[in-house]
Image 1 (tube, rainbow, N blue to C red):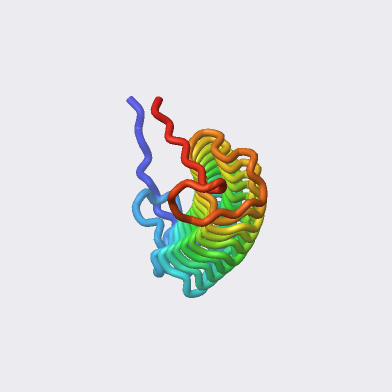
Image 2 (cartoon, helix red, strand yellow):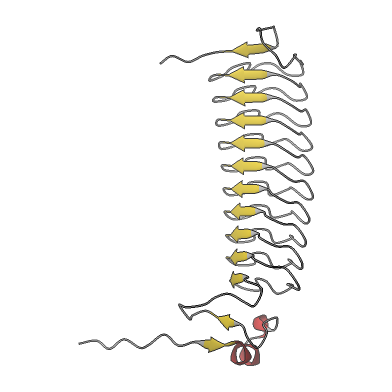
Length: 230
């Protein structure tokens, strides 16, 4: 018959005296493994090397993974899961980053969602972006209000804003243009600086580069609908 040892609670004072990486903890903090209460007094949760070490008044943050959220000071309500997620974040609020290097360069941006390896990893100060998929919106720096769902979607966009790309490699050549909608595999895949285009369907407007079309129906030479029925 095996005997299981009870889970022991490690107090912050003990951890600080033995491990330098826990110097930021207060006397009331409880550190894993407790199995009970990983929160500090400001309802922050951190698990991983140096996580939360710069926290001052930030509240409601979750930082899980090696070097996740290590620079957050007053930023609040961020959820960072994965190695180097949100590693440069300081005062940004309400960001979600899941996957290695997701939101890696963001400092003050807010309300961004990055899910996938390298998603939004170049973003610095922009807000309200959603990137789901490997390297989606991976080059975006200050572009805002974009939605990119799919591996490589909008992978080259830097300051582009207000675009929607759904599908693998959708809008993957776009750099600085705004207000495009691309839905489907490689939709608007060659567009670089064209704006106000709508392309729906696999390969829709795949060769269009810099053209701009009115964001309205009926269909024009720059507004192409391909409805897939199979």
